[in-house]
Image (cartoon, rainbow, N blue to C red):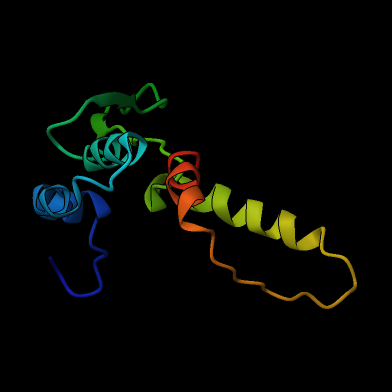
Amino acid sequence: MGRGQMILLSSIINEFRDRFLDRYENSVLPSHTKALQTMAQCRQEYGPHMLAKCTDHNCGKQVYIPHSCGHRNCPHCQNHENRQWIENQLSKRLPAQYYLITFTLPKQLRDLAWKNQ
């Protein structure tokens, strides 16, 4: 990886996913496992590709481009949408002070809350 080149999230997931799942297998939700699987294939050479063709009739150049995963948590695919969403949410703020309140759920409710995120 050259200097200044961004590390792809998919390469990190592919390198550490098995160890992560082994360590946290009892607390990883199925939706998290699916997200890891989806993002691991994002823009990878071994994944699906689409054919892009130059529209200039004299050129005729064709190139295969790896598919993006499109997952809502993928920083490569959804960065622009995330930024737009944040800006939209910030524009809805009321002209008032906000406070963050942290509380602990009773032990009896934690499993229910965890499974219904």
